[in-house]
Image (cartoon, rainbow, N blue to C red; front, side, top):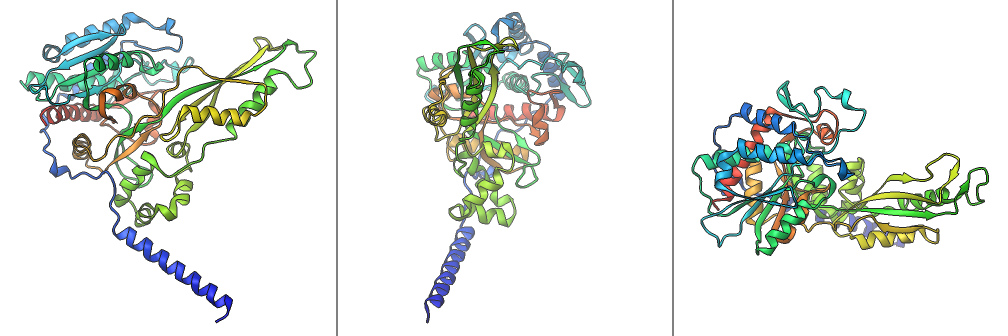
Amino acid sequence: MGVGGKVALTAVGLVVAATAAVTVRTVTFKAPAQVDVGAVKLASARPIDVNKAAEHLAQAVRFQTVSHQDRAEDQPAEWDKLHAWLQTTYPNAHKAMTREIVAEQSLIYTWPGSNPALAPIILMAHQDVVPVTPGTESQWTHPPFDGVIADGAVWGRGSIDDKGSLVTLFEALDAVAASGFKPTRTIIVVSGQDEEVRGVGARAAAALLKSRGIKAQFTLDEGMVVVEDHPVTGKPTAIIGTAEKGYATMKIVAPAAGGHSSAPPADGGGVVTLSRAVAAVNDHPFPMKFQGPGADMLKAIAPHASPVVKVFAANTWLFSPLLVKVTAKTPAGASMLHTTIAPTMLKGSPKENVLPQDATAWINYRIAPGDSSAKVMAQAQGAVGKLPVKLSWTKTPDEPSAVSSTSSDAWKTLAALAGDESKAPVVPGLVTAGTDSRYLAPVSTDVYRFQPLFLKVDETKIIHGTNEHISLENVGRMVRFYQRLVETAGSR
């Protein structure tokens, strides 16, 4: 046999071997994070007055607890009104729990369990909302702070993020307390007042709990939802965030001589230098990798997707490049697989005919698990090279969170309940935004991020956007989920 024949035979052998390996791995593939709903004893659902819960949420929307970037624009009295309203509206919950205030307006509630030896659970929902974008008020179907109930929904800023969670959680707690339920495991509620500006509330709450030696079984906060039309299956999928990206904003300053625009320097001045630096940083993206919680989501959903998806998920050793390419077709998909770089703000001269004495840009990073702020800074420094610019962080960066367990008792409880309520597959996922729950990691064995409401992919745009609203069906789902969670986790 000639050399060509031997090469061909070898190639055929490799193909056969690879095919066999793919087949075996596909047949024996076991998706991660799977939970048998029937194996977990879940509390039964109690009757819910959805209309009453919706009216309470509408009332909460009317408190303008808006966190502005310039904190001087905040209205502290609105938080005071919200706190008083919570006490009046949910007397049974307030009778069962003790209430503490930290960092001026953040709330900590504690419902003592009968067995102090058991690790408590922490449930979170923040009080503040983002501002309405100036000039868009007329685009709202109903004014953003009127708290209108219409067309089967509660309309207004915060109806989903995050007063929807805060109100439905208290609806559940009040009903459970009124029933005479006594938890075995202590239940702690943490409600920060300034989540939307990475403020001090949740940090202060975590510090207080840490000083008391608290180590919770798990913390649950906002983050992911039941996606009605998951891109992989086109069907509902409950996604529980097991990790979230880090958050950091870099400031790039290009010092310059300044002067009159009629006599610009040969190099163009600070603005040109700055633009080159920003472009250099942006042109050195972090590589996308099919690993971590983003990859785990696809692996976990594979049994519910097409056979092709299962083949790919079972054989990432071979198909990782293709999986990355497919996932990265959308910005949201790409963000699951790497640290993102987003230039967001620029500042130059205050006048059109004046050369700036310095030009400044801000670049927002969402740091993927496995990366770090130190690595980000080093890469940016390498990208700008010898350009005469200064790089710094605007605040101490929040590093990416640890990845929480998908085999613990806490995961089994949450996943079983999410699956039972949604009748959909439950998978882990990566939260690409940020939540207050990151600060509770030192006092929690695991941290999860999930709101038990159904949203289509396109509907997620209303969060922080125009016409934010939540359906009455979702209000009912959330009250029922939190009620069952409190009774299930509080009794295990």
